[in-house]
Length: 532
Image (cartoon, rainbow, N blue to C red):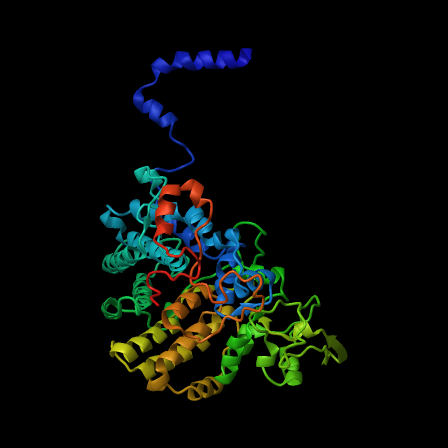
């Protein structure tokens, strides 16, 4: 106590000697820069989207099951496939995007907006913010947007929930600004994990994202959808697989909590390598269309130290890929006594000269060794998707150059060829040509063909699959409702996520105002652009 008194007295004696400026310096955290280069913020924002181990909760658990792309593991099947609410899991994306990213998304724009020498990084910040908030609003509807993350700048700690229509209006405005600001002769972008500072590629990504978001409005505001799509195409979208917006990770296992240096989804797959399964509806469609990506997307592996690849041997025993996949509503460990189309018996194969008995559960396609590699890239938006969207615009409105058929064919080709980014072997020209010829574009079924391919393309991005399904109704899937007694979606697909319950405490006034506009307040009530 005597020591504390002496220190306090000494501080009091020093106070008169301090000027106002000196006192301000003392209160400034010396570890935090007030003039940080906004380029230093960029890589963190890029990595945060897919480097957190818990990211699988956001990508896989609900949308992965709802879109009939994934099943098998407990979380995806129990909550997504069976339609059971869990407040924590529904809030995972909210907590991460707002808790870890909102301030940085504001900061990168605010630090550069009034500096004519930082127009490129300002534009990139606007693109990043649009991408992240598009994920949020597409899943939750009305969300904190215009005031979110501005606590440091405005002092607003309880942001209002903006209407989704207003948010989309601002998305288009932000992307317009970004497109205008991006200049190949402008400021140098450093530490960029997507395009290594290539402004031309950023510009094409900006406009491709604009195109994606424009088509969201096809049901609710078709004229605006057409106008914004027209603008995006005219400004210049992706031209080849060289323009893919992807982030590349390192070959490291991430910690079980928080971010790491490896791909978060791959890390989750590898934590339980035999639990996740690619759902039957998707594999059946890929087999029907003779898609050469089946064995790049999925595989069968032994539980030995080498995870020996037995995919082809199992296929030779079973005879088709569809029977090597599980229905969306099934857990990995379940027997299939009520499903005559699924093998329920162990299979004996020869491996390295010896007979090996393979348990039935290992005969179902799981994520392949290329998708589960820690250093697998994550694709935020692909050239293939862009071509499919261009095909839809050509079909609907005769927009752009080239026919819908030409864009569709380019999309098929790009979607297959991009898999070499994962380290998978290139599909031969012969097999690729066979795939394209097996799927000729037909105007009468064109919209369905296009969006079925978008569904296949987004195997690792169920967020986007779920959004695209809601805007098009494609694929034409059915909620199976196997456990009707526990189902909490009235036997139908949910169409949004509910807000985290702790918003009632943290931001009650704005939360209550938001839920009053959602009638009824339930996850089966569509968001604004998902007009029924």
